[in-house]
Structure formats: structure tokens, C-alpha cells
Amino acid sequence: LPIEPLLPQLLETLRVHGRLVLQAPPGAGKTTRVPLALAAAEPWSQGRVLVLEPRRLAAKLAARQMARSLGEAVGETVGYRVRLDSCVGPNTRVELVTDGLFLRLLQEDPALSGVSAVLFDEVHERGIGSDLALALTWQARQLLVPDLAVVAMSATLDAEPLARLLDNAPVLSSEGRAFPVETIYAERPAPDQPSPRAIADQVRPAIREALATQQGSVLVFLPGQAEIRRLMEQLQDALPADVELTPLFGDLDARAQDAAVAAAAPGRRKVVLATALAESSLTIDGIEVVIDAGWSRVSRFDPSTGLARLLTEKAAVAQADQRRGRAGRLGPGVCWRLWTAVDQQRRPLQPQPEILSSDPAPLALELALWGSAEGEELAFLDPPPSGPLQQARVLLQELGALLPNGQPTPRGRAMAALGLHPRLGAMVLRAADLQLPATALKLPPLSAEQRQALACVMAALLGERDPLRQDAVGADLCLRLDLLEQRGRAGAIAPIR
Image (tube, rainbow, N blue to C red; front, side):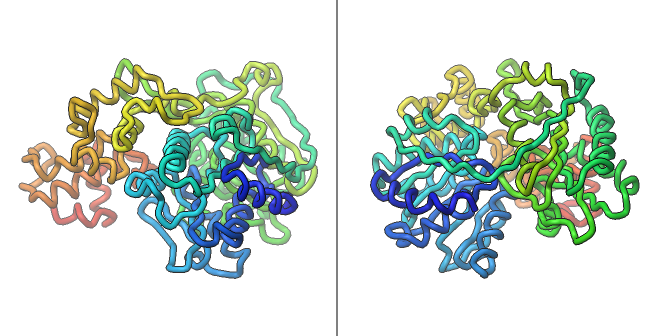
């Protein structure tokens, strides 16, 4: 891999300075090679090496890839920890974790006992969890663990601001390995108000053209699962017999994940319908063609309502370039951009950092738990806006998570441990205390345990972990609870009927 020649210099730089910024394009090997190199070298071999991944699927797949390279099973030298799932053992030296889980570890043990290095992967994505984890880790290093090695790894982000943030950290670069990619723009503008149907109608003929005129497998970037499901239904029986159609998004089971990223069988090709997950967090074998619908699904906080909304927005130039690069990993490739060259000039260069636009309530709770309500002394690339942060603290006080002086309450600590949005965490914790009007849900009287079980399932239905998100089910909670009971997928719910 292209990163290999850089590893000796990287290790020596880290020994001298204790921190660095690594720039390397997708496919260079930074995610899989750098952690293993640290875990095998002094002084980091004396502790665990933690690698923060922005997505659960990326953490699992990277762990599997590293374990395979060692000829081991996951859970031996390399393991992972994500929400509700972990695979580690007593001899695990490298752990891939999501930023949310890492925040829980850091809040419980700011000294990160037994950890020798923390690597932040894909920092260019500027997720709010990653930004916060980096800021808290850097302060912990300054105050508690000066020997902790900190590595920030990026594919596209300008390294200089990040290096200044980390006390003028050294910057190393790997050129990576990429072949030229021909870029084809659409002749007609993309729709201004994209719907799953409009996006599918635009992507479908592009897939047919790519299969008819190009060799190799095809990777299609779509904004979300709704578009993927629609195209899966439309293309399932409409593609040539030698073409495999696979989806790729975060909630797939392990078998479907492996099928999506594996190379096509000999004599066959693949069409992979993917979310932004495939931009940089993982590698898909055999891709020579990329079709980019040009959209991203993002969460935007609305201060007027105090709630966040999921919006479909145009992908930034940096995101589009990441996607195009996926076609040039094995040889010369082709990228269809389903927008015009004129539209390309009008797109933002970088996506807006989540910390400037996302719901600030989870961030405000984490800052309060850390003892830094405003976060002013923390090293943020972009400080959180003070207005929404104050609005979030008012909400947290109303939910019983914070005292008027900003200190977290025991309930606030319990809410954070649940890993839910504070609103949903408060619902789950209060369910056992309240006399829920069961008649409103056509339920018999509920015990405290049953009320809390119901609240947990409702939190899942309302949040990102909705087990029914792939089903054509309306928003009515009673109907959704009925469906869960019928399927036997909510064992805690079944007894309450």
C-alpha cells in the first residue's frame, strides 16, 4: 500500500513530537496500516491503540480487514467496539471505536488508562462527535497524559489549521495511488427539489449506460436509504444476468456488508448502491465506474423550533472529488456526475462542519459532563455557536439534566450513558416514574419495567435506530408497535399487550 514507505518516518516523528497530522487519500492504507504499525512499535506496544471511526460499519469492516491481514479472527490482536456490539479480547492491542463510544470512555476515564495512542480517522468529515472527541482528547493530553500519542488522519482537509490546533503538530503526506478518472457531466441541470423518485429517475438510465459502455463494477452514490430501496426495487430484475446488485448503508447486517464490499465473482460485475459511507471510510473491490447523484443528507438545527431536520443538499466539491476518486483505484476509470459543469462551479468547496449546524443538545450535555459548559478553553477547529449552545442548556435544564448553574445532575449523567438524544434519554429514564395513560395506547396497566421497555422501543422508533425504517409503515406509533409485536422483534413489548 502507498502508506508503507512513510511508516518509519511516521513512527519516528511521533516518538519525537507525540502528535502529528497525516494527509493521505482514500486507498493509501492509513486506516489499516498505521494502527498496526503503532501497536507493534515501542513505546505504543505497551498499551492499546484506539482508532476513532465516524461510522459503525467502517469500524467493523476496518477491523475485519486488519485481522485478515494478520491471519487472525477479529477479537484477537484487532477488535472493535460500537454501540450494542463489541468484539475484543484480553490480547486486543488495536480497537476501532465510534466517536460516540469513545466519548463515553473518555468521560469515565479522562486519563485513558492503558491507552498509548488515539488515532482520529476521517477528520476531514468534520462530524460533531469527531470534533468534540479531538478537543477533549487534546485537553486530556495536555493536563493528564502528556505521553499519549495523538494522530489526526485526513483525506482532503487542509492540514495547516488542524496542525496549528494541535500545537503546531508535524504534517506528513502520502500521495496514495490513483489513476486518471474521466469526468462526465450531465447536459441538463439536476432537480432543485430532489425526491427519491426524481433521483432514481435520473440515476437509473446512467446505470444502464455505464453497464453498456464501460467495464468493471459500478458504485452509485445516493443520499440515503429511501433512494437505495427505490432503485433496488426498480433494478432487481432489470439488469443483465451477469450483474449483481447490492446495497451499502450503515444498518446492514454483517453478511450484507461483506457482500457489498467484496469483489464480484469471476465473470460477473457489481452495481453497489451506497450512501456517503462509501466516500472514504471503506474500500470496495473492483470499482471502475462511479455514478454520483450529487446529493448528501445532512442534519440541520432550526433554532426557531429547537429541533433538527434531515435535509437533502448538494454535495460539496470535496465530497464529489472523494467519490470520483473511487473510480481510479484499480486503473483508469469514469465518473458520471449527474449535474452540469456550471453547477459544479457553484457548489461549496467543503461541507459545513456539523458543529455549526447540528442539534447542539448532545454537545451541550457532553461539555457539561466534561466541566466546560462553554467549551471556550477547548481546541475546536470551529467553536460551537454560543446562541444555540445556550438554547440547548435551557432545554437540558428543563429535562432535568443540568442544574441552573450548569452542573450535570445524576439524571443528566444517566441520560448521556444511554447514547440517545437528551429528549429521548429523558423519556426512557422517566418512563418508570410516570403513570403512563395506558388507555391512550390501548394497553393494560403497565409495571415500571414495562413502561421503561415501551419507552426504549419508542425511542428506537423515533430515533436513528428505528428497526422499521426499511418498511412501508406510517408514522403512527401504535401501528408501529403492533408491527413490532407481530414480528416478535421486541421481546420486552410482547408481554405488555
